[in-house]
Length: 197
Image 1 (cartoon, helix red, strand yellow):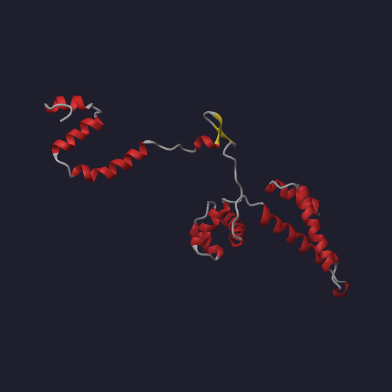
Image 2: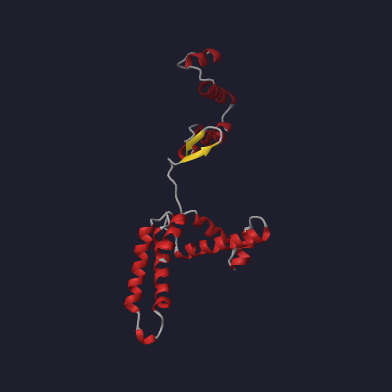
């Protein structure tokens, strides 16, 4: 039973079957330690909740790529079930409001559970993505670089009110020097003055 469950979970979560078997055995050992014959209960019905509980705890604690609070981990499972149920019933992807109503949660909590589910799996930035145009490319290729012109935009917005306060002659001087990139000698010729002036 444990091995069959392990194979199924491996296909879904990418966990080694041996790890799941080992966790199930720990649950079995705990069940053996706590089992009392005086209760007159079958050992299998007593031990199965221990084994399943240990396996669930293992997945809850170790399979998330990012640490997410337990309530959000549980909400993710509930969200997946609700999404599947509503999708089959409605024939489309359910809205946040519909999910919140079915799950008896506020819309904010549904959105939070959706965001938290992104922490379940992670991918390497070097992972290949199939691109119909170019074949395979790395995920890192889709991350933008720092735009050096962005600093200029910020500078222009910061300087605009100060430049607007200058007289016409001073604005022309700034324009010639920093926009047209003329030398001091060229600007002096335009104004009919020496470079030093």
